Structure formats: C-alpha cells, structure tokens
View 1 (tube, rainbow, N blue to C red):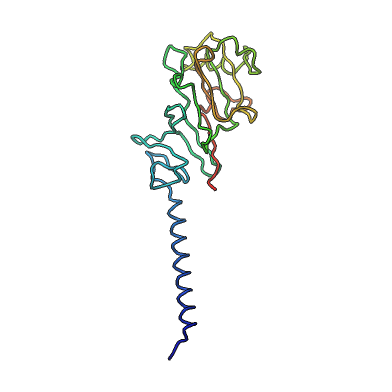
View 2 (tube, one colour):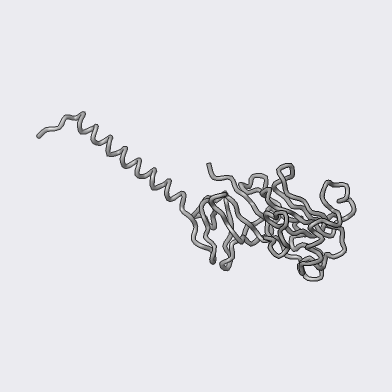
Length: 218
C-alpha cells in the first residue's frame, strides 16, 4: 500500500493540530488551579496564596493556617468567609484594644486598597466611625443620637472604650470611594463594619466584617 506525499503531510498537520490543542487545554486547566485549603477555609480560584496556584493578581496570604488579605497600608486582615459564586469575601474589621478607642490599623490610616487592586469594598457594608472630631458634623453621615454606632458603643464590649465620643455611621454606597475606610488622629480614630444590616436586625445578629468583591479574571 502506498501513500501520496500530500496524504502524509495532511496526517502530520492533523497530528500537530491535535498536540497543539492538548497543550493549550493543559495550560488552560493548570492556569485555573485552585490553591490548597488554608486551615479550614477553601481558597477558590482566582485567589492565590503562592505562585503555583490561582491568579497572582488576586494575592492572599496563608500564615499558620490563617488566610489573610494585605492592605495597601501594609496591614493584614483575617479572611473569615469567601463566596466564589458571587465573587465576594469578608475580612475581619480591625480590633479596638480594650479601654481605648483606636483601631489597630490606625497607624496605616485604616483600610486601603491599591488603585489597581482587583478587589473593592462592596456596597453592603455599614461602617461606624468612632471617636471623631467635630468636623465630621459637616458631612452627610448619620451622627445623631439614634446612629447605629451608639448601640455599638453602649452594648458591645469592643466599643465600650469609645462610649461618649462623637460617632457616625453610613452605608458604603456606590457614590463613595470603594477602596478606603479612613481613620486618623484628628479625624476619627476607630471604626467597625457590619455586613448586610437589615431593618429590625438585633445587635446580637450583626455580622461584623468588611465585605469585598472582586472582578473575575479576563
């Protein structure tokens, strides 16, 4: 049996196409590898704890089985939950040391994200600013005696050191920067955040955290 040169070339071209397709498929799949668990938390793609998994643009850190996000100010925040289907994660708000009214991230200016970060602060966060200067009264924030921050100061141990200070709360909506919650000496020195407060929710049901959302990779 004989084969024409054209037939041999055609078979070779087909084999090369198949091999190229397989290589592309393998590269695509390996590039979408999820990272190993960090403690009890799954680390879904595109979050990346090292150079061998996830997408490095979505960098998070696993230290001693604790998953963390690093802010632009160099402060680490514990990641307490991740919802990959809605591209959201929640980090713990900073601690307020006992008998003080200073957030533990005060020296880094509060929570900040780089301008080119794929993460941003979602619009489901109710932020409470504590121990504020009177300049805050020029803002449209709710600084009244019925502000939610009053409940935090009066009924939550973590807020007891801020009791009697000027405080305000606001919903982090789309008209505000989605990359910063600012605290500073001479402004407000502490804050906390609650995710998805609904009318009628009791303070015992508050879900403390800062919810972030990310843009899926291109």
